[in-house]
Image (cartoon, rainbow, N blue to C red):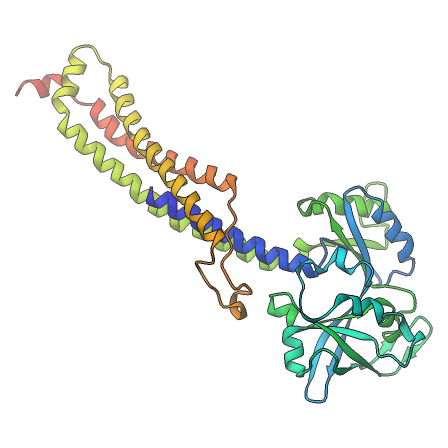
Length: 390
């Protein structure tokens, strides 16, 4: 019971941790990216229209992706500058962004490219990046690009002054320390993109169907079989972007399952010892049953059934206790975490029925397997030898 309880609680916490990090990553990156081989999509409006028409697509947004140096009056820091569509940002990528100051509406109100040169374009910074630059909302920062290439000519290094329209926090240091958001039109003009974009971000109604939708999207622009050969466009899902990270989490979860299964195995050995003692204690009764016509198989089934009942009771109580503990741990912040290390302030819990079924099944298999040796030992008893000394 204790082994099963520990196993399901640990798996629920590991699943919750994995899901929470996944939600944070998806909050910044959409479920699916449509990219071009040459890094630029000029006819992005037609592509956006085709992609948005797919029934599985909830929202889509063009974006640009650049590297630049951000400089304030105090410090300078390299950053990833993404140009985003203010109209679609809240629908596509901002679900995991928590604003520390400012408003997303200022990103929309300040957009418009160089049509209003007297108004510096707004830039939204990650929390750690803003702390490094020592800026707050309303301050100005300079975006420096060493070199850039426009649609018509090479352009020298450029410097653009922006005002900090907001500071957001994803909860993952990798994004909070290196990500900056600009209105799409301002980013296109500043980085010499013209009317082109780097790609299209796609949010799906069901994130688990990214592979299927990726094939559908590629089929829209590729060959009749949906392959990438013969099309200038290709897709990249959030799973591929963070493959190494989630593979490490999955490996950690698998190792945790194997280690904690040893606790269940210890409980199974306790069933072995209990049944062996029962066989030794009931030797005369077993001999009497066999002398009255009970077969060897019947005796084996009796003790196997006893082991299954013990294992079933322990597994059922363990699953019930684990569900109760996991529910309490999910409802109340019992375990606090350092957000600078684990990206989360508390340990989340996610109860997955499939994991409970897996643990219960494995526990029952171990308990039944552990009862076989005492059962076969009882079945091998010779009633003549036992009753001779009665």
